[in-house]
Amino acid sequence: MSETLARPFVMSPHFDVAVFSCGAMLAAHPGAVIYTVFSGCPASDVTTDWDRHCGCDNAARAMRERSLEYDRALDPLAAVPDRGNFLDAQYVPSAPRAHAPTQDAIAQALNQALRRHAARTLVIPFGLFPSDHQLVHRACVDVWRAHPELAGFAYGDALYPRLAGQLQTRIADLVTRSIIATPAIEHGRADRSHLAAKRDAVNAYASQLKAFGPDGYDDVFSTERCWKLELAA
Image (cartoon, rainbow, N blue to C red; front, side, top):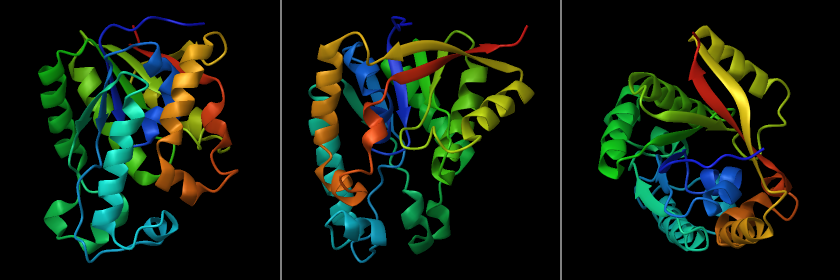
């Protein structure tokens, strides 16, 4: 099934997550905003194994490269970029304690961005894995509950929906907060132009794809699914 979203504002923990997870949906909604939470630039003397796998010798260079890839990826989707400037979890251990992102800080930044873009639909990750995705998910749920005028949807974070029990656990967690998640949107089967736009967008992430390897990101081209979020009666 498919659904047209009004002024979608899509939360992305990292530069690639929203494009990998719901790029076809974004292509179907030109002008959608993608807000990347962990886009802060770490110190140049920091390096991680992941950055080295991406072909970068330090974290600052890696984040600059990812930011450029992000901008290139959004062109075929006709999406609008925005950035949260929080540090990626892999860089937090090397940063001053005050720079560690918190759920409340992310929620405050999201509230400001929603007003800035006059959003009417909030699309959030389920936060299946890893911990920084989960942190974003919790902050998003807090904000959505505080804004009943916003339509709410959740997507399965690409590369992780097949982890045994993770999606079911997240849906069950939402129920404890009186939120019902109902399958609502599928993209990727009907419109080849949306699929082609997503493929072009994914291919823009050269450094990330290098780290994943040739068979490490196959599921980003699977049929996309979103769930509608509603408060239980």
